[in-house]
Length: 366
Image (cartoon, rainbow, N blue to C red; front, side, top):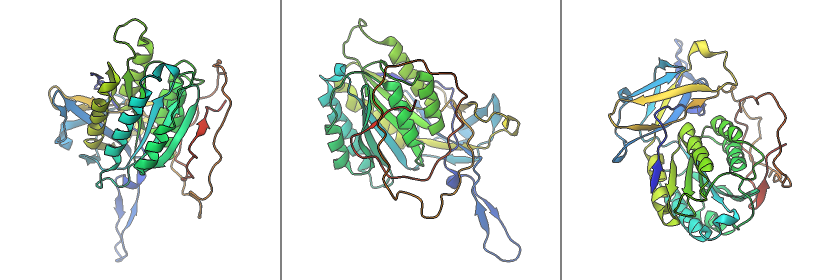
């Protein structure tokens, strides 16, 4: 199994205001102290590993965080963080995967069993998607392993490979959730039919604070016919978002790769820091962040930057997962050049909404 580890350059994004450093507003008149969540806190899930595997016993003093090249103080430190996981598991169902698709589905099912069977993590959930020329929600977020397995069973080979569309749309769905956000995708090569671009996928993942773990299954063992460009693009997406990529010589290695993904997720640290005050004019621009660790031979997996977010408004009374939303279904279209446009504003997390029906088809908005 060939692992491609992310570089030491790394970063993070603000997400969980509720677990930001809480400062008490102490009162002299005997009233109960008030606590306010600091939405400016930036949180970064971090995996550290060496040749022996993940390192889970480091202390806060072992870490350094830099924003824009200048060191910032670490205000929050969690070892083996238990913040909830939302995982989107995506299967490439392009025709080139038809032969190994059955094994991939069984391996993915075993991964979901291990991910969701632990009673120590009762808030972890997963969703399963397939992607070809279209992206299909096989099963929305749930802890029900039987339901997720049935969703995987509905995956069928089709034409096209829309990797960037899949990452972009999965990121948009994950951005609606709290906790740690993860995309795991099994594919055999590069993109062929996406409407969105590599840059769109990267930006969407950064905005959603989603770590990407590509499991690249090579259909042949020789270099002839391999999509080196597609493999490199997936490796870059992994390293820049704090994930990890795995290049497999065959589907028989998938279980081992899934085990490594799960080990990384269960041994993550969480670092929190406050942005530099002199970077207040960079809203809408990716702020570069680097995490270093004082441990010889260690590799750091963490995000390479973050977008500043607007404060999240409180949902209106009675809002939430009340009425199901209509599935997004847009006919397939050829890939065309997109008109120049202003970069979108950073996402803010909207109120929770109803899940998508199994079989809903997602396509990027024009």
